[in-house]
Length: 436
Ligand SMILES: Cc1cc2nc3c(=O)[nH]c(=O)nc-3n(C[C@H](O)[C@H](O)[C@H](O)COP(=O)(O)OP(=O)(O)OC[C@H]3O[C@@H](n4cnc5c(N)ncnc54)[C@H](O)[C@@H]3O)c2cc1C
Image 1: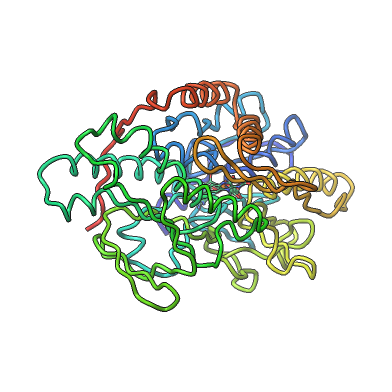
Image 2: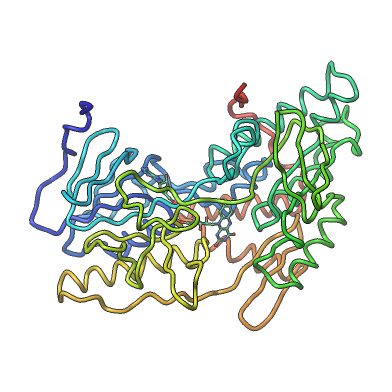
């Protein structure tokens, strides 16, 4: 056994039930907030010392927002939560027989365990795409995309022939869900408002943006109206949308695409992969509990199959029922709602021996923004698009970002950007070195 595996976490000992939470995403933080000042000891473990607001990562990627606007330090978030202890650590394994969580800095025992590890980019087994492309799942990814894009534009202005220049200024986004559509729209706005100002040496036409989608429409989880409107706006923004198309390989220079089974090669140095996610499974979880998409099968109280005191919430949890054969969608609302209800259920169970009420997902609708002034929103009884859709999208995202300071920074940036796009700062915070 490694040394760190023998070392118990240095935490205050008391008689309160000990709840270990793995993951400070939407699910984890909403679970913990509900346990503030309750007679339980909560130990939160996350590999990062911040919570990330993933819906706005694409804006960091195109320099529309700075990284600190979309992340919140965990210690600040829970400053007044005195029954919560945070440890920055990566969980390596869980031992559900001995109620123990092993991390890279030591181990900790629990009475109750909550797995809220979320999901990560799914490259569907393609090692080449994983190696040469860049995902859009974390603040690190967003900074990498920004650096890589700006580094390539800097290379394109000097010392290369026409073919190289074209490959450096060609952007291929894979995945026509909300993340891909938003990323493509934002890149198109970058081209429209910033390219000629900041890179006068690069001709406007030479920056070409593709959006590759395997299904026959973009935004397939939204209404047909939403898909059609989004497609119309993306085309207006000069984005080439390839439907029924699958990227099958990438060697860092050439992207292989199957369009209706016909092979096409696009030469590009920039591949952004937003085509799917899979659950972050921890070592020690019984294989029988793992279902499609690398998610953990839970019952209606978020209890992991076969385990009395282990729960899973958020993206990692698959609450499968006849009405919901795939489990709930991997979105922030499902994670938030599961976090809140599990906290109530767990307190009830600790005090009264039974759970209070089963989880029932309230679908508040879905939205995606397309470029600077347009969005689509499927709400319960109606559909919105255009400027009104965009205003609603902006409002919802603004109230959802954690922390007053972040809300203020984002609102300020958006106002400036709305009035004049030129205010964005294209900073390469750190260089991105692609794996070779
Ligand atoms: C680009 C993008 C855009 C999105 N846009 C939207 C949107 O507009 N609307 C919407 O509803 N949803 C959106 N989503 C989905 C939404 O962000 C997720 O559904 C949500 O974040 C899930 O929350 P979670 O708490 O389950 O997991 P996460 O938020 O992913 O948090 C998981 C946490 O677990 C930690 N962790 C994982 N493994 C370990 C380990 N081994 N040890 C320690 N810590 C670990 C991670 O560091 C992380 O902090 C978007 C996602 C992406 C990537």
